[in-house]
Amino acid sequence: MMRTGRRGDALEIVREIRATPEQVFRALTDPAELTKWWGAAGTLTGAHVNLRPGGEYRLEFLSPEGATAWAKGQYQVVDPPRRIVKTWFHSKFPDLRNTVELILVPAAGPTRLTLVHTGLAGRPEAFQEYEKWWPDVLGYLQGVES
Image (cartoon, rainbow, N blue to C red):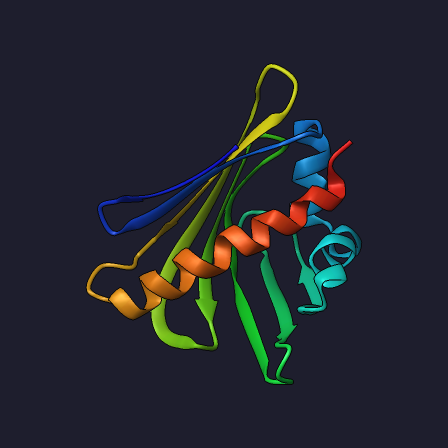
């Protein structure tokens, strides 16, 4: 199941992943795990994570066309295995301060992952870009499914 929608200035995506919340949390926060599922798609080339409130992260990407990009920020909330909140700055929109929240809820079998990307008000080009990008990224998470 995957659902994408708009919530004010936010993009909200809900996906069910056939893995435990602990497995999904680890896949979203451990550099080696990030490289396995996101890097397997050929886009994530580096992941640096200091997983604690105030800790910084940096993700490095390579597009199929060979262009480099990055996303970085600080963790605001780290509540394993239920919730992550982090600031989000992307090289494509370096002047745009965003927040990405990831909520993990055990469902009847799979884990329900809700991603809420806020701070997109007045930036329709960014909203459209993330509306295309995040479903693809979350699709790569199938690699961690049990």
